[in-house]
Image (cartoon, rainbow, N blue to C red):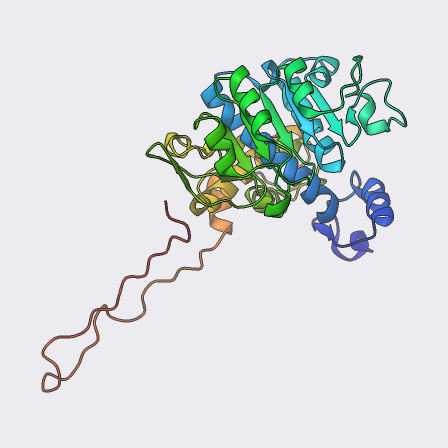
Length: 353
């Protein structure tokens, strides 16, 4: 029906379908038409994209590629495997083989480390299953594996204990600790706990918002890994360049662009995501990268290709700000007032440091 009435140049978004129908319809149509399932792709790939963006930002401090690091995931559900799969894609992009990339990622579920001997091993876990002895708890896995980062997607509040955080600080100069579960009471640890128990050395991100924190006179601004960084830019690029279908690679492209926007000022505050007041520029950069990628692989259907992709993108987005339509002062009769009242200047920034 969509193809008959509108042709190929429309993006269809599936929203709030039952899981059985959502996955079935996505697999049926994703490579034929431009479709997007919010519950699957945004919640999983969108989240995965912003997490990978955070990890890539950490590389600026660690001076290490992702393919040189090791990650332990606490939680092995769909969110964990979605993030892990995108990490593998990035590691492969950096030159690592697929098997080697999977070897650098460890998954822990409620029964412990997922190994080849784990009972009822799920298909999505098989590539991550390790040929190791069973290890039941996180702290023992950390001591055994010596990871550069731990990523919490367990929805078990407080599971990154003081002992866990201090062990990560012991084996890493700048430990990566992402406590991504939300709401706040399900977060694996708070920002305050992460900064305090590592003496401010941690590279921290959360799924829930945490307030700014001051330690030893230094101000830290915890970064929130929110997929609002990802979705607007991906959608903008897909719609403007009439991309035929949305593949996982677009979300990895988005992750790289988000990480690239992180500034020295962000890092100074311990923030590994861009300031939200730059979200429009973030979206433009993502859309531009998607445009270049899709014209290169032949999936962009907008022809002729714009000579200047960035200029074209900026010409198609709008600003909610308008020029002043009135004078800067009100004119009052001289007999009533000696001076006019200036119109106050309204600050446009929604987020300030």
